[in-house]
Image (tube, rainbow, N blue to C red; front, side, top):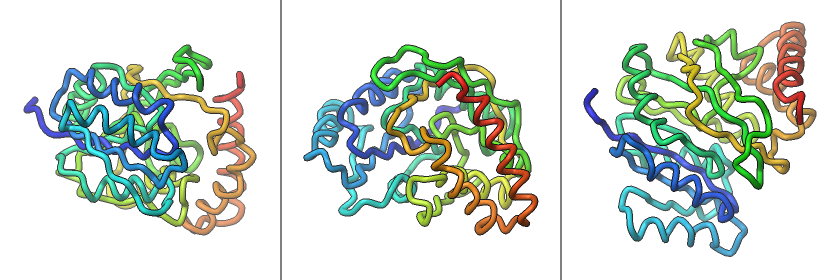
Length: 258
């Protein structure tokens, strides 16, 4: 496969503690044609996260820092990165997650094999303060369609790659801030632009389970989940009840060890 440029979008908010590990996992990639756009979302850490990123920028010009003047949430930070991206492929990597060294190489090959616009992979689930596994790895389905993700979303942003040469650039709904913004994004793409997203069942990344993460409290997500289905997707009341019930049951199984 011709080695093409991948634009990696990394939103960061108060990320000084972990962003260095995230950058190191990108530097270790066997596929070397990439740019990493770290978008600082008006962090309240006196610039400590920016200092970490800048140290890496001094030795590798592929790493770039964008500083937002006001907090726009993960959706706004990702959108800024997408607008600045110059690659033919788009990847998302949160500032506390990690890639295996062959993540980009294998996902780009998988993208080509499936002749797909969107692929995602399985991932480990590691702790907030350690890289040790805290839950069994999450193994993704081989493919998902729009109706599938109304019930549950198996696409972790940090495992997804989009072929924007074919798909074009699309943006996150900033009305969602940092809550369910990725869900709305995948619903939009699978409803309007792509029939299928393909899942690579090989484990290629590590997703960090943080206790203070917005999605850690599943009950706090019920209201925005309902809002997405009812107000954005315009789904009938009784179908919403059905999809919320599916989502709740699957979520309890997915995180039952926490």
